[in-house]
Image (cartoon, rainbow, N blue to C red):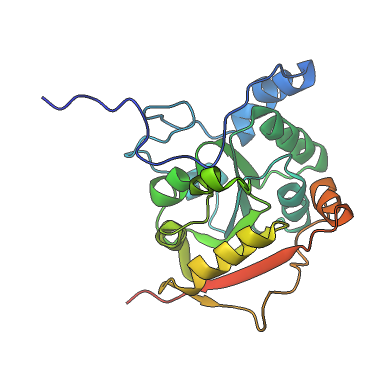
Length: 241
C-alpha cells in the first residue's frame, strides 16, 4: 500500500508567517471574501491546491475577458491599481500572506474593482493545474523573495523548471513580466528564461524597460533608496506546436 504524502515534493518559495490580523482585516475575509476570495480545494497543506481542482473562469468572473495573474501580490497595490484602471480585463492575485490578501480585498472594494479575485495558495500549483491551460494573457512576478543566502536559493520561485509551469498557464504570445531589486536573482531569472525553449525575449538590450503598468510601491522605493538597481524582464510565450 502506498502511504499518503506528508510533505510537498518541491520546496516552496515562501515561509508562511502567521500573525494576528486586525479587526478590519478579519472583517475583510468575512464580508468581502465571498466575492473576492476563491475557495480552493486543498491537498496536503493549507496553501496547497488539490491536483484535481480547476478554476472555471467564466463562472467565477461572469464573463469572458483577458486574465492577468500576479504572483506574490503582497498588499495588492499593483494589481488593484491595474484592475481599477482596466475594468474590461480580469485579474487574479496569488498570495499566501493573509494580511496582504485582506488589504487587497479592502482596497479593491474601496476602488470599486469587482474584476479582481484573490487566492491564498502556492503559486506553482495555481499555474500548473488550477488555472485552465492558456488562460492568462500575462503573468506578473514583481519583487519575489530573493532568498539571497546561498543555502536558500533553491527556494527561489524562478529557477530551472519554472518556465514549464508559467508557459502552461500563458496563452500563445502571452507575456511573463518580472522585476527584482536583487542583481544576482535578476541574472538567474534571465539565465533560466533565456534557456527555456518555450519563451523568447520581448525586450532589447540587457534589461527590459520598467513596466509602466506597475505602480511604484514602498517596497520598490526602499530598494532604490538602498542603491539597488531595479531590473525588469519580459518574455513572450512561444506558440504551441
